[in-house]
Image 1 (tube, rainbow, N blue to C red):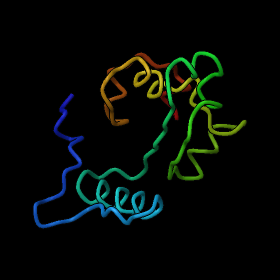
Image 2: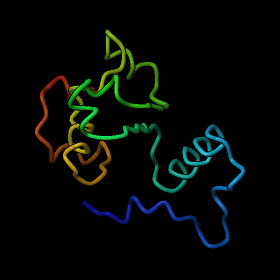
Image 3: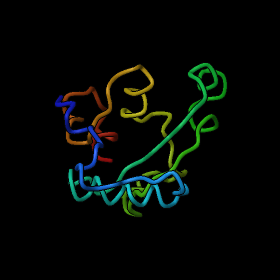
Image 4: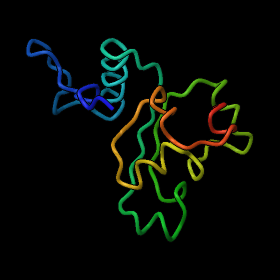
Length: 116
């Protein structure tokens, strides 16, 4: 996996984030930057305080989650978006490096997970 793809460092002439930016502004700028520079069309950000909390409560109740997934993707989750069985979420919780969905071929996935 090419780690350089994940370097979110703007060009020297571009100021991406400002200290006064709120969450929505930061998210919007990040969406725009990764779309323009990496061709990423949708993304998800999730934050948890600790893996211990995840192990006690499960993944979804323990995280703050923000995404811009399209409606047709979200429709593949009939009971609502859940990361408890997400290959990508499990990969990251195990301490692995970030990944793009195009890298999913290298991970063991079920047919249902691959279809998503």
